[in-house]
Length: 211
Image 1 (cartoon, rainbow, N blue to C red):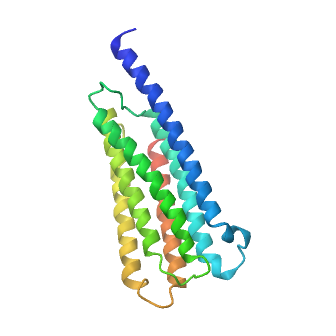
Image 2: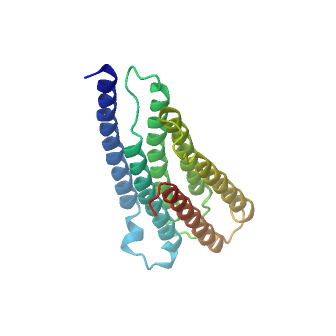
Image 3: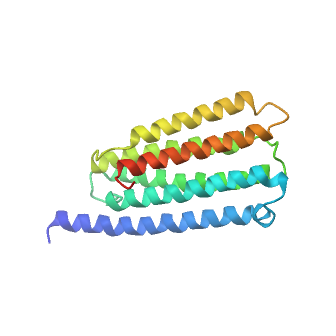
């Protein structure tokens, strides 16, 4: 077995371990989010919890869609973090970006609690998490492209979604966050976020030929 082949096999084995680590962390994060917000699930018909229920649904759907896209991507382009690989630094950047992405998904789930029982509460802190997840996704894609080459790179889509979410948060902060009656604005912005998330993942799958 050549040294190059041995190094590639070691990278694949290490990548599989890292994938399992991130899978476990994401499952834990989603579980904690559901436990933290069990009041919503126990009494979803309570009108005061409707905004929180939609926000939690948006997070869960985003996490599920992202997990599918990420799993397909990492299967086709494994982590390259082996000790002698010349792309090791970018491979580690990709890994840390993915781990940070999971942490921000946790943040999104936990900040839903802020609007439980208070549909007029500001969603600004919660929404900023969506800007962060797409910024981290963009960074991970850039790192992947460096280590694997630009195979129909999706960085432009991720960057465009990051910018779109930043605009959504900015408009919300300027027009809704400072008012006393935010309930309608909250539901509208959450529906917009879900639509942006859905469009983003649909475009990803289209580029990969999964639609």
